[in-house]
Each structure stands twice: as C-alpha cells, then as structure tokens.
Length: 119
Image 1: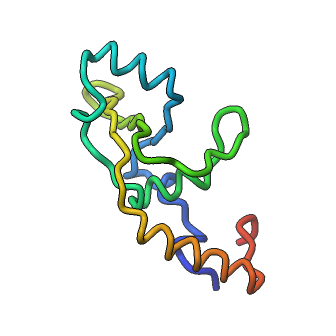
Image 2 (image 1 turned 180 degrees about the vertical axis):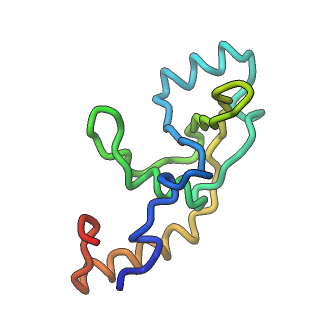
C-alpha cells in the first residue's frame, strides 16, 4: 500500500482552501493594489503540506508548478458562507528540511515501483 502523503493530495480535501502560486507580475500587481511590502504579508513555510502538494500540481495551462522558491506569493482562496470567497496572500519562507526528506522518500518509493498515477 502506498504511503498516505503520496496517495492523498491535501489540496483536494474539502477543508483545505485553494492555493495558487502567483507569477511575479501577478504578485507585483497584488502588492501594488494592497499598498503593502512583500515582507509584511503573512508567511507560509516551504515545507507546509499545501506547498509540497502545490509543487506537485499543474497550473491552468497544464504546466507542472514545480519548485516554489522563497519569496514567492501564494494566493489562498477560502470558501465562505457569508462572503462566498475570502482571498488571502502568503509569502513563502524557508523550512525545506522536511521537504528534502519527503523528496528522498518519494524517490525511494518510485524506485520501488510506486507510481503517482496509479492507486
């Protein structure tokens, strides 16, 4: 049986809000619109489960998101009964030790014949 982290994408869970990596152009537009410096945004660590899952996902153009670097901005879209949607932004900060161990385990599982596409 596959390890849960490989088998289950946390971003697909009902209680986890949608996460989207902004392009640098989108990020600059948001910062300008909000009138805030990047460093003043709430933070999210690189080894957060949502970031790790987002790195394995594909954008709206079908391109794999891949490595999310420190300083990137993540748009978090929460569903709300009162406002329909609540949008927040998070600045990606360090914390990649867990990610490195997770990547090592993923590579080991793949070498042992586990496949992302199968269940």
